[in-house]
Length: 347
Ligand SMILES: NC(=O)c1ccc[n+]([C@@H]2O[C@H](COP(=O)([O-])OP(=O)(O)OC[C@H]3O[C@@H](n4cnc5c(N)ncnc54)[C@H](OP(=O)(O)O)[C@@H]3O)[C@@H](O)[C@H]2O)c1
Image 1 (cartoon, helix red, strand yellow):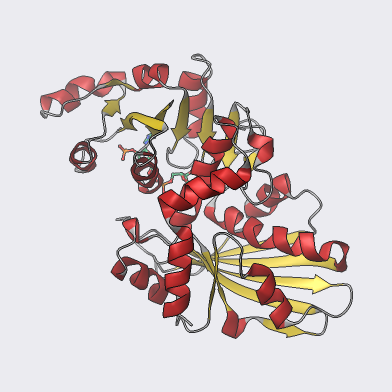
Image 2: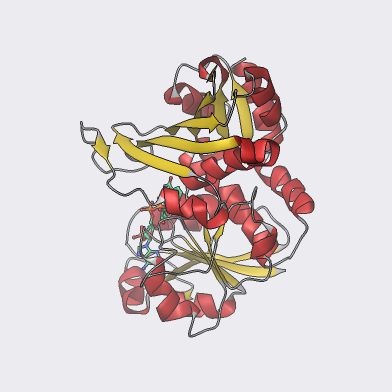
């Protein structure tokens, strides 16, 4: 039994909590709350123990919430912490809690891999370097965009290797998640220096990869356009689709109208949090011309990284073989069933 604490209860933290709660080999010590808001009651209703910063205990208790203890106490009780702080908050938590208590931790994709505020020695992508995370103390789970790129690039590299000259990926990123209350500005913004390029190169160092990122006023999902340039003629469309047909966490659609179509269908089908956990290749716009193939796919930003974090726990703590870990993940996240259902809906 691994005792796990989730430090943060936002869009990612709440998804992680509901997933690990279903695993009988993981004991969820609890979740952290920093702000007095309605999400505390939501966590208590889900039977999660709630831990808060020491200097806020009085404030939370005065409002009548049964608080289980401080963040420090929760970390102390745990074998592993999944840090789900808002972007950039992980470094402070590492210095304040995880290092002094000598506790291993998983960080999210909004944290730095390099430089002064680096939190970990590697970025995990379950399709590429699952085994490397085994027994490690601090690991970043790649962000949704980074996880999605790795999920498609690795099979392409394994199959076509040196025949691939370069990858150019344009990330069309959603502005906010459906649950976020922040304003969605009527603007398209560009990123001067997208972190995703270096993040992917952390686990695929030889990739000749160039990434641009645009943020658009939508809440539904990301869309990526991946252009793969080959030395000679690009493989046929059928060959490319065949390569991804049985990939875990990759679905092939033909008739979705857009990201809202996919998200709304996932919600209608009753998937927890409306997540598909997958990237969805849109076959009708997969184009091959001369030496170039262009793959357009949507990437379920909030859902993608939850099975990835779960798999990372399987590697770091349980040191389980990847094939077993994937089976366990599939039982919890039902990804094979969802893939089948959604491929039928969007055939
Ligand atoms: N959203 C996505 O689609 C997505 C996808 C992949 C990766 N990520 C990454 O996952 C991380 C979390 O993103 P999110 O979307 O879940 O953010 P979020 O919804 O804004 O939630 C952030 C959480 O951090 C908590 N918090 C505040 N101070 C904290 C501290 N010192 N330590 C720990 N937690 C603290 C907040 O708690 P209170 O509410 O109590 O203040 C809040 O619950 C980021 O690194 C992000 O880049 C996000």
